[in-house]
Length: 244
Length: 261
Image (cartoon, rainbow over all chains, first blue to last red; front, top):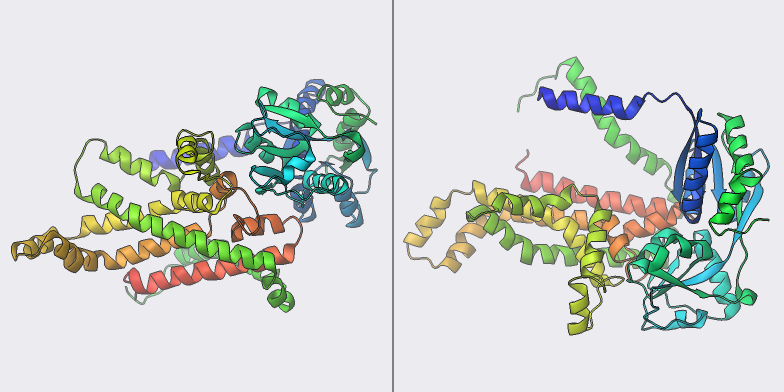
């Protein structure tokens, strides 16, 4: 009994206090920003060793709900403007909201495009396994808009909670096609290919960022500066995002 | 069981422990939209999710009965090499994160999986993103509850009763039907109920393996997860429904099958 107890206490101490004196800035970022923000974190922490960026990656709408429920978040980067507008309305943002990057939609298919998907109309084919993001998250919302513009009634087999969950199932070859962001294709390496959606039916995807909590406000604002105006811009560009 | 007061410290810590479980439920109840409850629960998406939850959880319970019972039997009654390892593997889903189970199922029974590929070639059946996939995911996560309960009952059963019946000329089938099953009956029923309740609450393996489509694979827990991002009233109402059903099962179990007074 005693060794187990000691082990448990040791684990608690190690996990709980870690002995880290850095100031923490919690950054909630959209799933599609995962790779970009991991790179931003590395670069920013290298420049400012006294700050610890803690990333919370997920579907933008889930992140918004966490903040509305009082999650202690310093910075929120959403894959649309609507989520931040909601937080502004709720009085949770009092700094500026900045649109810092844009993206485009594309159709992702497993390498080799086994189902021979050529355009959005193919997403209506019943015999294919089609995935979309849930309409509650930005990528699902954008995809619904693009499909409506194209006049296609898609026949999805699953509505995934965020774009990376969708991408994972396309990478595994379990889905024949799905609508994701252009930047996700590069993140998936050789496992997926992109079937472009023509510009006239594509939808502009706009990423917004703002500071949320009062704690460490200057650190949060400094990180946002780094992303929207500093060396972060090159990192975003390298990851395939378009900059305003 | 005696009817005396517990010491103060024990009672205090027990109260804190109880509050730890009760407080979140009260939080849920406090957030419940009572006046709209009927309207919210009457929505199509809720009805679909409820129906799918019942079908998948009952399906998983049936799978557990036909596969889990024999497994428990073999584990309890037969000595063989690797039995401890097999038992560990069977019980693994009890502690494994369900999403890991879902990923493992996807890599095995998915279209590109070792078993899923041949299955599709032979039968045309594709498990992921179908209700069969949802039943498979729920079975994977919930069946260990049946195995662990029934195996324990079989081990505790005094085999002399079965021996006596056999020596009086009963066939193996008669012994099973008239002696063994009645004696492990309460455990079998509680195992089935626990399996059903766990399958009803299954989330991680289902969304990973079977996906999330209203009317096809979106069970109540998935519908709650999705509704949390938009329609919180619906999320709370469905959560309450799950809590009440699960609580009813556990209270029933306690009173009837665990020999409590």
